[in-house]
Image (cartoon, rainbow, N blue to C red; front, side, top):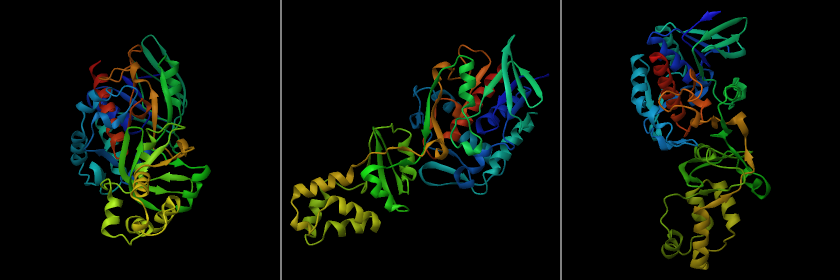
Length: 393
Protein backbone atom coordinates (compact mmCIF):
# COMPACT_ATOMS: atom_id res chain seq x y z
CA UNK A 1 0.00 0.00 0.00
CA UNK A 2 1.34 3.41 -1.03
CA UNK A 3 1.05 6.30 1.43
CA UNK A 4 0.27 9.90 0.47
CA UNK A 5 -0.61 13.14 2.21
CA UNK A 6 -3.75 13.52 0.11
CA UNK A 7 -5.74 11.51 -2.42
CA UNK A 8 -7.85 13.48 -4.89
CA UNK A 9 -10.70 11.62 -6.59
CA UNK A 10 -11.30 13.22 -9.98
CA UNK A 11 -8.91 14.67 -12.57
CA UNK A 12 -11.19 17.53 -13.60
CA UNK A 13 -10.82 21.27 -13.12
CA UNK A 14 -11.27 21.35 -9.33
CA UNK A 15 -9.35 18.16 -8.60
CA UNK A 16 -6.30 19.09 -10.67
CA UNK A 17 -6.28 22.60 -9.21
CA UNK A 18 -6.39 21.26 -5.65
CA UNK A 19 -3.66 18.70 -6.34
CA UNK A 20 -1.32 21.26 -7.87
CA UNK A 21 -1.74 23.69 -4.97
CA UNK A 22 -1.14 21.04 -2.29
CA UNK A 23 1.70 19.41 -4.23
CA UNK A 24 3.58 22.67 -4.72
CA UNK A 25 3.33 23.28 -1.00
CA UNK A 26 5.22 20.10 -0.25
CA UNK A 27 2.47 17.51 0.05
CA UNK A 28 2.60 14.12 -1.64
CA UNK A 29 -0.60 13.94 -3.69
CA UNK A 30 -2.25 11.23 -5.78
CA UNK A 31 -5.04 11.99 -8.27
CA UNK A 32 -7.24 9.08 -9.40
CA UNK A 33 -9.78 9.13 -12.25
CA UNK A 34 -11.63 6.37 -14.04
CA UNK A 35 -11.37 8.34 -17.31
CA UNK A 36 -8.44 7.63 -19.59
CA UNK A 37 -7.60 11.33 -20.00
CA UNK A 38 -7.55 14.26 -17.57
CA UNK A 39 -9.90 17.21 -17.89
CA UNK A 40 -12.34 15.65 -20.35
CA UNK A 41 -15.06 18.17 -19.53
CA UNK A 42 -12.59 21.05 -19.86
CA UNK A 43 -11.71 19.89 -23.37
CA UNK A 44 -15.27 20.19 -24.67
CA UNK A 45 -16.07 23.45 -22.89
CA UNK A 46 -16.54 26.75 -24.68
CA UNK A 47 -16.71 25.09 -28.08
CA UNK A 48 -13.26 23.62 -27.46
CA UNK A 49 -11.74 26.93 -26.35
CA UNK A 50 -12.63 26.75 -22.64
CA UNK A 51 -14.48 29.71 -21.14
CA UNK A 52 -12.08 29.50 -18.20
CA UNK A 53 -13.43 32.32 -16.01
CA UNK A 54 -15.66 35.37 -15.89
CA UNK A 55 -14.51 38.82 -14.82
CA UNK A 56 -17.95 39.49 -13.35
CA UNK A 57 -17.65 36.76 -10.72
CA UNK A 58 -19.54 37.72 -7.57
CA UNK A 59 -21.24 35.41 -5.05
CA UNK A 60 -24.81 36.25 -6.13
CA UNK A 61 -24.14 34.66 -9.52
CA UNK A 62 -24.02 31.25 -7.85
CA UNK A 63 -26.97 29.11 -6.77
CA UNK A 64 -26.81 27.23 -3.47
CA UNK A 65 -29.02 26.41 -0.51
CA UNK A 66 -26.56 28.69 1.33
CA UNK A 67 -26.02 31.70 -0.96
CA UNK A 68 -23.13 32.96 1.18
CA UNK A 69 -21.10 29.74 1.15
CA UNK A 70 -19.05 30.49 -1.99
CA UNK A 71 -18.08 33.98 -0.83
CA UNK A 72 -14.92 33.05 1.11
CA UNK A 73 -13.29 30.86 -1.54
CA UNK A 74 -14.20 33.23 -4.40
CA UNK A 75 -12.66 36.17 -2.53
CA UNK A 76 -9.39 34.33 -1.94
CA UNK A 77 -8.90 33.07 -5.49
CA UNK A 78 -10.23 35.48 -8.08
CA UNK A 79 -10.61 35.54 -11.88
CA UNK A 80 -7.53 37.80 -11.96
CA UNK A 81 -5.54 35.13 -10.11
CA UNK A 82 -6.40 32.43 -12.64
CA UNK A 83 -5.89 34.78 -15.59
CA UNK A 84 -2.42 35.58 -14.23
CA UNK A 85 -1.68 31.84 -14.20
CA UNK A 86 -2.95 31.50 -17.78
CA UNK A 87 -0.66 34.33 -18.87
CA UNK A 88 2.30 32.82 -17.01
CA UNK A 89 1.97 29.83 -19.34
CA UNK A 90 1.88 32.08 -22.40
CA UNK A 91 -1.72 31.17 -23.22
CA UNK A 92 -3.37 33.84 -25.36
CA UNK A 93 -6.95 34.67 -24.42
CA UNK A 94 -9.77 37.01 -25.35
CA UNK A 95 -12.88 38.41 -23.73
CA UNK A 96 -16.25 37.77 -25.30
CA UNK A 97 -19.51 39.32 -24.13
CA UNK A 98 -20.51 39.61 -20.48
CA UNK A 99 -17.01 39.14 -19.03
CA UNK A 100 -16.42 35.68 -20.49
CA UNK A 101 -12.73 34.82 -21.02
CA UNK A 102 -11.71 32.17 -23.59
CA UNK A 103 -8.47 30.72 -24.86
CA UNK A 104 -7.54 31.98 -28.32
CA UNK A 105 -6.30 28.50 -29.12
CA UNK A 106 -7.55 25.32 -27.50
CA UNK A 107 -9.05 24.16 -24.22
CA UNK A 108 -6.22 21.61 -24.16
CA UNK A 109 -3.94 24.48 -23.11
CA UNK A 110 -5.84 24.73 -19.81
CA UNK A 111 -5.57 20.98 -19.20
CA UNK A 112 -1.85 21.12 -20.01
CA UNK A 113 -1.47 24.06 -17.58
CA UNK A 114 -3.14 22.13 -14.77
CA UNK A 115 -1.07 19.00 -15.43
CA UNK A 116 2.11 21.11 -15.50
CA UNK A 117 1.16 22.74 -12.19
CA UNK A 118 0.71 19.27 -10.73
CA UNK A 119 4.02 18.07 -12.14
CA UNK A 120 5.77 21.02 -10.45
CA UNK A 121 4.47 19.68 -7.16
CA UNK A 122 5.31 16.04 -7.93
CA UNK A 123 1.62 15.07 -8.16
CA UNK A 124 1.00 11.50 -9.30
CA UNK A 125 -1.96 10.94 -11.64
CA UNK A 126 -3.56 7.53 -12.11
CA UNK A 127 -5.91 7.53 -15.12
CA UNK A 128 -8.21 4.81 -16.44
CA UNK A 129 -8.42 3.39 -12.92
CA UNK A 130 -11.94 2.67 -11.62
CA UNK A 131 -12.26 3.05 -7.86
CA UNK A 132 -13.53 -0.17 -6.27
CA UNK A 133 -13.39 0.68 -2.56
CA UNK A 134 -13.01 3.66 -0.22
CA UNK A 135 -12.57 3.08 3.51
CA UNK A 136 -11.61 5.11 6.56
CA UNK A 137 -9.92 3.86 9.72
CA UNK A 138 -7.29 5.07 12.17
CA UNK A 139 -7.36 8.59 10.74
CA UNK A 140 -6.53 7.47 7.20
CA UNK A 141 -8.55 7.03 4.02
CA UNK A 142 -7.83 3.97 1.92
CA UNK A 143 -8.72 3.87 -1.75
CA UNK A 144 -8.57 0.73 -3.88
CA UNK A 145 -8.34 1.36 -7.63
CA UNK A 146 -7.45 -1.16 -10.28
CA UNK A 147 -5.05 -3.58 -8.55
CA UNK A 148 -3.61 -0.90 -6.23
CA UNK A 149 -4.43 0.56 -2.82
CA UNK A 150 -3.35 3.96 -1.52
CA UNK A 151 -3.89 5.67 1.82
CA UNK A 152 -3.79 9.25 3.07
CA UNK A 153 -5.07 11.36 5.96
CA UNK A 154 -6.89 13.60 3.45
CA UNK A 155 -9.39 12.57 0.77
CA UNK A 156 -10.83 15.05 -1.73
CA UNK A 157 -14.12 14.38 -3.54
CA UNK A 158 -13.75 16.14 -6.91
CA UNK A 159 -15.65 13.78 -9.19
CA UNK A 160 -18.26 16.35 -10.25
CA UNK A 161 -21.96 15.79 -10.75
CA UNK A 162 -23.99 13.59 -13.11
CA UNK A 163 -24.24 16.10 -15.96
CA UNK A 164 -23.00 14.86 -19.37
CA UNK A 165 -22.93 11.12 -18.58
CA UNK A 166 -21.45 10.35 -22.02
CA UNK A 167 -18.25 11.95 -20.66
CA UNK A 168 -18.29 9.40 -17.83
CA UNK A 169 -20.09 11.60 -15.27
CA UNK A 170 -21.87 9.76 -12.47
CA UNK A 171 -23.36 10.36 -9.03
CA UNK A 172 -20.30 8.78 -7.41
CA UNK A 173 -19.58 11.93 -5.35
CA UNK A 174 -23.00 11.78 -3.72
CA UNK A 175 -22.80 8.08 -2.95
CA UNK A 176 -19.42 8.56 -1.31
CA UNK A 177 -20.56 11.63 0.63
CA UNK A 178 -23.58 9.77 2.00
CA UNK A 179 -21.37 6.88 3.07
CA UNK A 180 -19.46 9.30 5.29
CA UNK A 181 -22.66 10.83 6.65
CA UNK A 182 -22.74 14.00 4.55
CA UNK A 183 -26.14 15.19 3.39
CA UNK A 184 -26.82 15.78 -0.30
CA UNK A 185 -29.12 18.48 -1.71
CA UNK A 186 -31.23 16.84 -4.41
CA UNK A 187 -29.33 17.19 -7.69
CA UNK A 188 -31.10 18.34 -10.84
CA UNK A 189 -29.96 19.33 -14.33
CA UNK A 190 -28.84 22.94 -14.76
CA UNK A 191 -27.83 25.07 -17.74
CA UNK A 192 -30.04 22.72 -19.74
CA UNK A 193 -32.55 23.13 -22.62
CA UNK A 194 -36.23 23.10 -21.68
CA UNK A 195 -38.85 20.97 -23.44
CA UNK A 196 -42.33 22.03 -24.54
CA UNK A 197 -45.45 19.94 -24.97
CA UNK A 198 -49.20 20.33 -25.32
CA UNK A 199 -50.39 23.43 -27.15
CA UNK A 200 -46.85 24.85 -27.11
CA UNK A 201 -45.57 22.13 -29.45
CA UNK A 202 -46.41 24.66 -32.17
CA UNK A 203 -43.27 26.57 -31.22
CA UNK A 204 -41.12 23.56 -32.11
CA UNK A 205 -41.89 24.39 -35.75
CA UNK A 206 -39.59 27.37 -35.25
CA UNK A 207 -36.60 25.06 -34.78
CA UNK A 208 -33.41 26.94 -35.61
CA UNK A 209 -34.84 30.42 -35.02
CA UNK A 210 -32.90 32.53 -32.51
CA UNK A 211 -33.46 36.03 -31.17
CA UNK A 212 -32.34 38.20 -28.26
CA UNK A 213 -34.85 38.13 -25.41
CA UNK A 214 -35.16 38.54 -21.68
CA UNK A 215 -35.98 35.14 -20.18
CA UNK A 216 -37.52 35.11 -16.71
CA UNK A 217 -37.94 32.36 -14.10
CA UNK A 218 -39.15 33.57 -10.74
CA UNK A 219 -36.94 36.51 -9.76
CA UNK A 220 -34.15 35.56 -12.17
CA UNK A 221 -33.98 37.33 -15.54
CA UNK A 222 -31.34 37.11 -18.27
CA UNK A 223 -31.02 39.12 -21.48
CA UNK A 224 -29.33 36.93 -24.05
CA UNK A 225 -30.27 34.86 -27.10
CA UNK A 226 -33.04 32.26 -27.00
CA UNK A 227 -33.18 29.45 -29.55
CA UNK A 228 -36.19 27.39 -30.58
CA UNK A 229 -35.41 23.69 -31.07
CA UNK A 230 -37.17 20.48 -32.09
CA UNK A 231 -37.60 19.78 -28.38
CA UNK A 232 -38.51 23.23 -27.10
CA UNK A 233 -36.31 26.11 -25.95
CA UNK A 234 -32.56 26.56 -25.67
CA UNK A 235 -29.90 29.24 -26.15
CA UNK A 236 -27.96 31.13 -23.46
CA UNK A 237 -30.99 32.96 -21.96
CA UNK A 238 -32.92 29.71 -21.57
CA UNK A 239 -29.94 27.77 -20.19
CA UNK A 240 -29.50 30.51 -17.59
CA UNK A 241 -33.10 30.46 -16.35
CA UNK A 242 -33.18 26.64 -16.41
CA UNK A 243 -30.99 26.64 -13.30
CA UNK A 244 -33.75 28.51 -11.45
CA UNK A 245 -36.75 26.75 -13.03
CA UNK A 246 -38.69 24.11 -11.13
CA UNK A 247 -41.04 21.51 -12.58
CA UNK A 248 -44.56 22.86 -12.91
CA UNK A 249 -43.50 26.50 -12.96
CA UNK A 250 -43.86 28.73 -16.03
CA UNK A 251 -41.11 30.82 -17.52
CA UNK A 252 -41.71 34.11 -19.30
CA UNK A 253 -40.02 35.65 -22.31
CA UNK A 254 -39.85 39.32 -23.24
CA UNK A 255 -39.56 39.09 -27.02
CA UNK A 256 -38.91 42.82 -27.48
CA UNK A 257 -36.67 43.82 -24.56
CA UNK A 258 -35.93 47.46 -23.92
CA UNK A 259 -39.20 48.81 -25.32
CA UNK A 260 -40.75 51.67 -23.38
CA UNK A 261 -44.21 50.84 -21.98
CA UNK A 262 -46.86 52.21 -24.35
CA UNK A 263 -44.68 51.82 -27.44
CA UNK A 264 -47.43 50.16 -29.50
CA UNK A 265 -49.88 52.97 -28.73
CA UNK A 266 -47.21 55.50 -29.69
CA UNK A 267 -46.57 53.61 -32.93
CA UNK A 268 -50.30 53.76 -33.65
CA UNK A 269 -50.15 57.55 -33.38
CA UNK A 270 -46.97 57.82 -35.48
CA UNK A 271 -47.80 55.25 -38.19
CA UNK A 272 -51.51 54.37 -37.88
CA UNK A 273 -51.62 52.46 -41.16
CA UNK A 274 -48.99 49.90 -40.26
CA UNK A 275 -50.06 46.47 -38.95
CA UNK A 276 -49.05 44.45 -35.90
CA UNK A 277 -47.71 41.78 -38.25
CA UNK A 278 -45.48 44.28 -40.04
CA UNK A 279 -44.33 45.72 -36.73
CA UNK A 280 -43.31 42.27 -35.45
CA UNK A 281 -41.60 41.33 -38.73
CA UNK A 282 -39.49 44.48 -38.54
CA UNK A 283 -38.26 43.58 -35.06
CA UNK A 284 -38.08 39.75 -35.01
CA UNK A 285 -37.11 36.82 -37.25
CA UNK A 286 -39.86 36.39 -39.84
CA UNK A 287 -41.00 32.91 -38.79
CA UNK A 288 -41.18 33.90 -35.13
CA UNK A 289 -43.03 37.11 -35.96
CA UNK A 290 -45.60 35.12 -37.94
CA UNK A 291 -46.27 32.67 -35.07
CA UNK A 292 -46.53 35.40 -32.46
CA UNK A 293 -48.77 37.46 -34.71
CA UNK A 294 -51.02 34.45 -35.29
CA UNK A 295 -51.30 33.85 -31.53
CA UNK A 296 -52.09 37.51 -30.88
CA UNK A 297 -54.83 37.39 -33.56
CA UNK A 298 -54.71 41.13 -34.23
CA UNK A 299 -55.60 41.83 -37.85
CA UNK A 300 -55.94 45.14 -39.62
CA UNK A 301 -53.94 48.30 -39.07
CA UNK A 302 -52.92 49.75 -35.74
CA UNK A 303 -55.58 52.45 -36.27
CA UNK A 304 -58.22 49.69 -36.32
CA UNK A 305 -57.23 48.49 -32.84
CA UNK A 306 -58.17 50.04 -29.53
CA UNK A 307 -55.49 51.25 -27.14
CA UNK A 308 -56.63 48.57 -24.69
CA UNK A 309 -56.05 45.77 -27.22
CA UNK A 310 -52.66 47.18 -28.08
CA UNK A 311 -51.75 47.41 -24.38
CA UNK A 312 -52.79 43.76 -23.93
CA UNK A 313 -50.64 42.71 -26.92
CA UNK A 314 -47.71 44.70 -25.59
CA UNK A 315 -48.07 43.07 -22.17
CA UNK A 316 -48.11 39.60 -23.68
CA UNK A 317 -45.10 40.24 -25.90
CA UNK A 318 -43.13 41.48 -22.89
CA UNK A 319 -44.15 38.56 -20.66
CA UNK A 320 -45.04 35.64 -22.94
CA UNK A 321 -45.63 32.65 -20.69
CA UNK A 322 -44.32 29.19 -21.55
CA UNK A 323 -45.01 26.08 -19.50
CA UNK A 324 -42.06 23.69 -19.99
CA UNK A 325 -42.95 20.05 -19.37
CA UNK A 326 -39.37 19.20 -18.44
CA UNK A 327 -35.72 19.54 -19.41
CA UNK A 328 -33.46 17.52 -21.67
CA UNK A 329 -31.98 16.04 -18.50
CA UNK A 330 -28.45 15.40 -17.34
CA UNK A 331 -27.51 14.19 -20.84
CA UNK A 332 -27.71 17.78 -22.12
CA UNK A 333 -27.09 19.68 -18.88
CA UNK A 334 -23.80 21.55 -18.66
CA UNK A 335 -23.76 21.38 -14.86
CA UNK A 336 -25.78 20.24 -11.84
CA UNK A 337 -27.76 22.25 -9.29
CA UNK A 338 -27.59 20.64 -5.85
CA UNK A 339 -24.94 18.26 -4.57
CA UNK A 340 -23.07 17.78 -1.32
CA UNK A 341 -24.67 20.12 1.20
CA UNK A 342 -22.65 23.22 2.04
CA UNK A 343 -23.96 22.91 5.61
CA UNK A 344 -21.62 19.91 5.92
CA UNK A 345 -18.51 21.81 4.81
CA UNK A 346 -16.26 24.62 5.99
CA UNK A 347 -16.55 27.52 3.55
CA UNK A 348 -12.88 28.37 4.19
CA UNK A 349 -11.34 24.92 3.66
CA UNK A 350 -14.04 22.76 1.97
CA UNK A 351 -13.40 20.16 4.69
CA UNK A 352 -16.24 18.18 6.23
CA UNK A 353 -17.28 19.75 9.53
CA UNK A 354 -17.95 16.37 11.11
CA UNK A 355 -15.58 14.24 9.02
CA UNK A 356 -11.97 15.45 9.42
CA UNK A 357 -9.76 15.00 6.39
CA UNK A 358 -12.66 14.65 3.93
CA UNK A 359 -13.00 17.51 1.44
CA UNK A 360 -15.49 18.21 -1.35
CA UNK A 361 -14.91 20.72 -4.15
CA UNK A 362 -16.14 21.83 -7.56
CA UNK A 363 -19.40 20.65 -9.08
CA UNK A 364 -19.77 17.88 -6.48
CA UNK A 365 -20.77 20.62 -4.01
CA UNK A 366 -24.12 22.44 -3.88
CA UNK A 367 -22.74 25.54 -5.61
CA UNK A 368 -23.71 26.21 -9.23
CA UNK A 369 -22.66 29.22 -11.27
CA UNK A 370 -24.27 31.03 -14.15
CA UNK A 371 -23.36 30.20 -17.72
CA UNK A 372 -20.20 31.92 -18.90
CA UNK A 373 -17.13 30.72 -16.98
CA UNK A 374 -18.54 30.97 -13.46
CA UNK A 375 -18.45 27.24 -12.80
CA UNK A 376 -14.80 27.04 -13.79
CA UNK A 377 -14.03 29.91 -11.43
CA UNK A 378 -15.76 27.97 -8.63
CA UNK A 379 -13.64 24.93 -9.53
CA UNK A 380 -10.42 26.99 -9.30
CA UNK A 381 -11.46 28.77 -6.10
CA UNK A 382 -12.76 25.73 -4.22
CA UNK A 383 -9.80 23.62 -5.40
CA UNK A 384 -7.37 26.31 -4.26
CA UNK A 385 -9.08 26.56 -0.84
CA UNK A 386 -8.89 22.82 -0.26
CA UNK A 387 -5.33 22.57 -1.57
CA UNK A 388 -4.16 25.31 0.78
CA UNK A 389 -5.97 23.73 3.74
CA UNK A 390 -4.39 20.33 3.04
CA UNK A 391 -0.97 21.97 2.84
CA UNK A 392 -1.41 23.49 6.30
CA UNK A 393 -2.14 20.16 7.97
